[in-house]
Every structure is written in structure tokens, then in C-alpha cells.
View 1 (cartoon, rainbow, N blue to C red):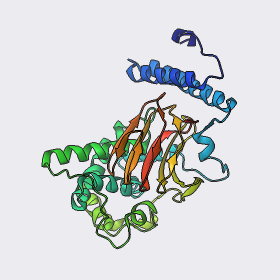
View 2 (tube, rainbow, N blue to C red):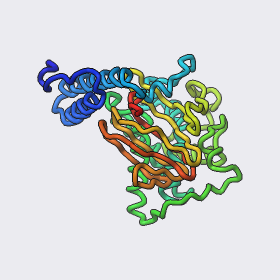
View 3 (cartoon, rainbow, N blue to C red):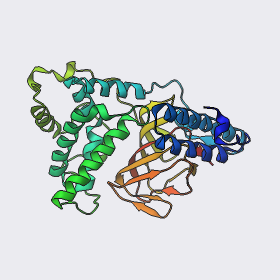
View 4 (cartoon, helix red, strand yellow):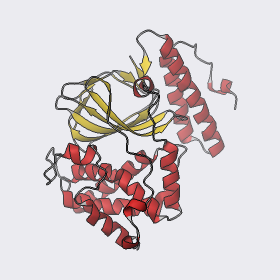
Length: 325
């Protein structure tokens, strides 16, 4: 499919035009009637994203999110391919893989569900439902258009909203901490090597529903992947923990923590951005997000002001080619 079919190629040097062109191609890819056409649209969209990055680097005062994230090239990164391979093992009904997926993601899932329900007992019950659903529907994941963490979190949010709608128990957003001695930031976001206090019982309920004999599986002998990433500080007041990196598609999944009063750099999205607020409050333009809230930004749009008065922690799934201005 020749590139001329989609109109004249913009002049190099104008990053914004390239971003808009990529956004249009991504939209056409989502509406494509065949996989061949979709792949071709995606290829061209990625091409224009790369042109945007090159153009931005030639313009003064421009850089990309990748420049900020990967300043230290020597640090090991967890590849998105590792997550995809793990989910493929779940598709093959490998209980070890499901347990590993649980270990890697249950803190994120449980925190989101607790924020949505304002009830930790309800959140535990919904977490069981989510991982059983992942076990049954893992084959529906499309690695060509999605990230594993993004897919897991969307299913968790959808399951929570559906369950809370039926029960009528959805509560107002809260900043209350869970009923444990340690603060939520240490329990959920610092990711100790041991499980959380309630996780053993929660996992037992999961494996019982899946008819897996947990007693025969020694946890320390299971495949748990690479060492969990550390928190890093790429800029003043901004901390991040890279969870998955897809260099081919220019996508990244990460936890981001802003200290009180810090503003995230003004940026233009070269791909879809998904944000789940897990702690604190966050302003995006004139919209105030509270724990449990979700925000989606389309390619070509820009965030002029993103800041937190209280400090916050969020899960961010975005393009590493986003352009700072």
C-alpha cells in the first residue's frame, strides 16, 4: 500500500504535523476491515511517529519522553515481550504462569479496585474475579495493539464497574488508607519481595476456584521473571518505576509518582495515553482526578498543564515518543 495513498508527505521539521498524521493513521488502523490493512496503517503510523521524534530533536527546546526515561542506557529494562510470553503461557493453562502474573500485577489491580469500591473486602472479592477472568479470557489479548498491563487494568476496571453497578455499592472516591499499619505507598508501590498481609489468603481462594493444588507448588520455585524494577528520579519531583518497555512500538508502562506541587512537563501525545490514578489527586488541565479515576488521551492531543497539589501516584501507559515542549 503506497504511502502516497494517504496524501502528501508533510515537510520534515514540523513535529506537530507528523503527530497529527500518525493520529489519523492509528484511527484508520482501528477501523480497518482486514488484518493486512490494519498492519499497513500501523506501520505508517509508526513511521510518522519516528519522523515526529526526529523533527522534534531538530527543533530548539524539544525532547521526547524516551530521552527522559532512558537517560541511563546501562540499566536493564523489563521488555514487553516478557509479559506477552507470560500471558501466552496462561493461554496454555499453565497455573505457574497465572501465579506469576498475579505476583506481578495484583498490587495494581487490588489498589485500583479498592479505590473504586472504597471497601477492601469488596476489592479482594473483585480481584479474585478479575484473575479468574484473566485465566479464562487470556486468548483474547492482542499483542499487536495492546500492552499486557494495559489489558489487565482495563479488564479489572471494567469488572469492577460492572460488579459495583449490579450491587449498587459504589462509593465516593476516598483517600483513606487500607486497614494496615504500613501506609499504602509502602504496601502497594514499593513492592516488597514478600506478598502483602492478605495476599496468601487471596491467592488460596484463586487457586481453589481454578482447581490448582497450591500445596504442591513451592512459591520460591516458580518462575517470577526479572528482579522488580527500582524507583528512579529522572527529574526533580518526578519518580518513576518502569514496568514494561516495548522499544519496537515505542510504548512504555510505568508507575509515576509526583511530589506535592510538582508539574509534569507539557507534552504532545504521539500515541494513546492511559492513566490510572492510584493515590493522591492530579489535575489535567481543568479536570481534577481522584484515586480510582481513569484518563485517556488520543494521539495528537497535548497536555499543557498536569500537576499535583497533594502529590500522587499513577499507572501510566503511554508512548515513549511523546514530545516535550
